[in-house]
Image (cartoon, rainbow, N blue to C red; front, side, top):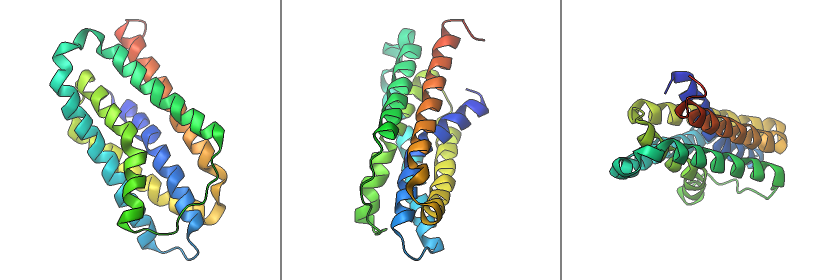
Length: 187
């Protein structure tokens, strides 16, 4: 997998965390650097751990399904992408807690990184080097989550749906690209 492809997947995966960070930023009256660092650490950390866990799971049964791995990668990426597009179109405008405690951040970090677990399984099928991939996903999510806190605090929830829509479209295109390359249509 080329670096730009990994970068596109990392940005696409980080859009859920960015969107939640925008909402968290909206809920904060007096923004402090620790808010951005806390959100970045929770979301970036989980976005780095989940692909690694998915990779370990996927590696365990890769030999059984190598002949259809490109189809699995395509289906997972497209399903995740369409799920993000659907969420963006629903426009959930619920209230977000202003708390940055572990009890508040842990479920948000897990919820926004479930997609990364599936991507990790896909990476195992594609034999992607997981350490730099997981680190790139984690760092990009950290940065975008920290930015999301500031964006939410300044601009409000205006960009939440657009971020989720963008992330979903990126993942759908990456899934299609992987399939077309394995079928020999793209080189």
